[in-house]
Image 1 (cartoon, helix red, strand yellow):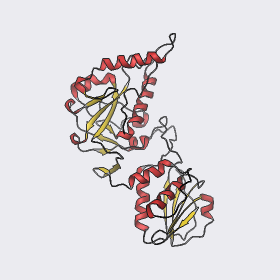
Image 2: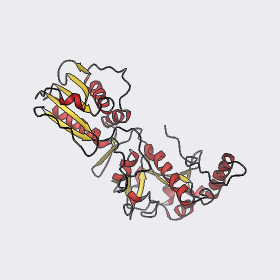
Image 3: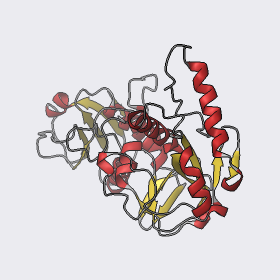
Image 4: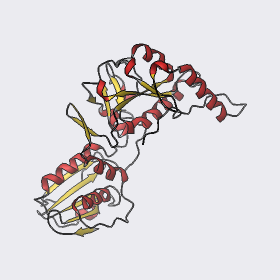
Length: 325
């Protein structure tokens, strides 16, 4: 599908890879070529500029195939960096090219999302009734095109609804030690094989839009570690840290990749006086949280989910997950 208009980029269209190979190259037009990881499209020479990107046509992370796991090919989600590369390419070529062709394998989802965004950004007519585009690709482009960004030591990640906190996900059973000693680097939970050795001497923090992913991940790990995770205190809980008390923040690349949200590490201890815990209803200073009460509440909730003759193993990983808006 192609649309045309006036100055600058006056057209944008999206195609399958096979269709793209059949188009006649022109130095006045550029191509955004999107392929699956590990391969590139064999495009003819003669285009004004070609941007090549590799990511899968997926919209949700796969928590069972973590980044860095050598035994499983994890889906390569579209990421903020991909969106930034597209935006940088568009800016660099805006006055050089008359239009843009976008292709992916089928010409249905990934390429349509990019074309839809370009049409909106540059005022090019587009069939906005088309709804088969990849919403993650489109949303990332919209987000990265915003002026609202958070920058730490050269790593940039957009905070869609920026609040004043970063978040640490742990287990209820760990709260007494945190209340006594604070959040200490290297003392947190390891998130699996892809993270072994990665978190040594570091403290992991997440953006608000990645909290749900990490709560689910810890819930899955708890079920694997224990037959009775509720009784053992292996109940995911969220601790929040004010932005203003952390420094030397660095991007956690595996965490950002897996959760498709900003993930960070620091090497400082955050004192208990700066920490708050979500108890299922509100945020409380960590010193005032009764961790045994949280375990009892989780146990009571689990009992309601189980039949009388079944062993109590049910864990609602999201019971103490805050709702962000």
